[in-house]
Image (tube, rainbow, N blue to C red):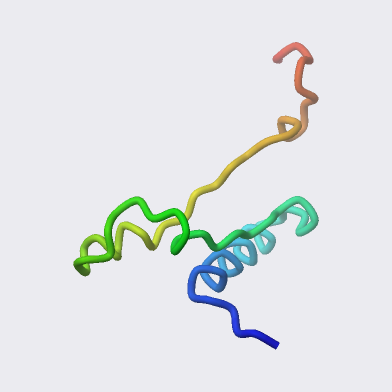
Length: 72
C-alpha cells in the first residue's frame, strides 16, 4: 500500500475536521493537489508556505434550501 503524500494527508485532515463538525462524509471529497497546482514557486520557505493551503469548493444544493427556490 502506497503512503499518502503530505498534500493528501492535509486534505484528509481537513475532511476529517469538516466531518467532525457534522457534515456528511459522503459529500466531502479531499484532494491533495499542492504539488500539481502550486500557487507559488517552491524556491523559498515563504513560497512553500503559500502552497500549503486549503481550498474549499462548494457545489450542489444550498444547505437547507434547494437551488432555485425563493429565499426567505
